[in-house]
Image (cartoon, rainbow, N blue to C red; front, top):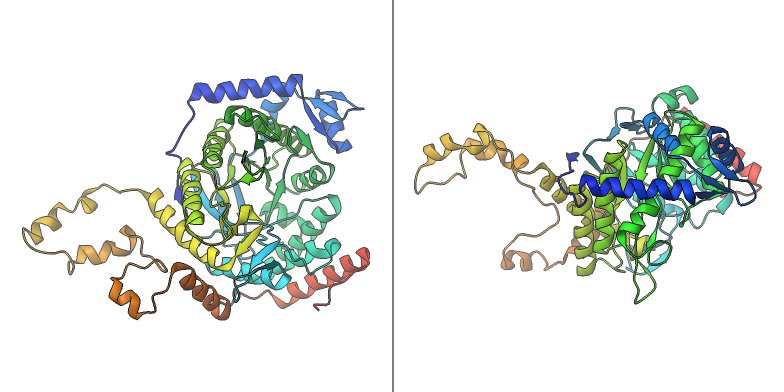
Amino acid sequence: MQAQGGKLKILSRDELYEIHRATMELLENVGVKILEQNALKLLKDAGAIVDEKGKRARIPEYLVREALKKAPSRISLYGRDRKYRLNLGGYRVHFSMEGTSVFVLDLETGERRNSTYTDLENFFKLADALENIHHASITVKARDIPEPIAHVYEMYAGFKNTTKTIDGYTYGRTIAMDTIKMASILAGGEEELIKQPMLLGFHNPVSPLQHSKELTEGLMVYARYKQPVIIAPEDQAGATAPITLAGLLVQQNAEVLSGIVIAELTSPGAPVLYGTVSTIMDMKTGNLAYGSVEAALINVASAQLARFYNIPSRGTGGGTDSKIPDIQAGIEKAVTLIMAAMAGINFIYVAAGALESTLTASYEQAVIDNELCGIVLRALRGIEVNDETLAVDVIKEVGPGGHFLAHKHTLKHLKTEHFIPKILNRQMRDAWEKSGSKDLRQVAREKAKEILTKHQPQPLEPSVEKELRVFIKEVEKREKCSYKMF
């Protein structure tokens, strides 16, 4: 289920224009450093002023405007089941699992440990089953698989264990092409993949004002194959960006827009999302503060900037700096998620499962966050006012001193008008004690175990699975390493 956001705004139209104006000044006079030579040449040929030795491109405003005209304002992303589609753009809001944690809170012991391939499969299954999660990201890294081949196994785990949309990989030309080839196997060829994109790429500029060689290569590969790419800086206010949020937004904007120019020069019409992973550096600890209210404010402003440029948006909501599913996690997740959703971020990453500034993933937290996402989706729907919902005739029928419990109007609207919790407890204390006095983490742990035991994702077609495995073996041979799975 998706809903409409966009009601929360913190910047006026004039303030958005001031950020844009300052960004253009930055791009034209300071420029960005681009470590991928082909991208630098594209910019030079298009009219940017390029310092070859310093690998810096100063980008005139007209190139930015031309790129934004070519970038689609709506993007479709398809799952393995081609009937499953995310429509990104406008004010539509979608929730994703978090991505690429390197630790997991063990479901049995509760202790933090390294993430494994089995964990990755489990999180894909969990995402497949959780009804309020729209996108199944690569929640954890498979740290028990050799790094040169990990990407193909992680893609395989996603294709095998969910029919929802999944991430791609854009770290370098070779890895990006591997994922294109794997997705093409499921799509029925490269042309079909181009028509109905299945991979969501990530391009993270290196703040301040740099684009790395590997991620720019991946961006260009995905642009050619028309796979959507999120261009999402991780500016840190007070460290890699100005401490003022307005200054951070100017720098982030320059990084995003220069990435869009590269994508559109590579392949006009390439689908891109205006992204942010930006937050503040906590000046007491030196750590990033993903659960901060400032991170939430940055997301709201980023949603507004994306609409200013008429392209889809991606932000973070549900981030927390807590190490376990506790009250701190609940506070930070609720604030960041509801603000991002109310602002109309089209694709909200980190919505489920993240702890410890996304370093750690938690099965229990994913189940809790699914419930929170359901609450937020209900909030976004607001209150519908019409003759049926005003219920004047119903009130007349019941009259003074009556009740509405058995009225057909109550039965008709109960499941759509009210959010019905699955794991939050609204019992009286006596009933709660008789059922074991379980706290929310205990309930979520039991629910996660139940899903992992009972939920069976739709299987891959045998011929497709065989072809994927053959391709994985080819990559293993190329990289001279293997992981004994098949």
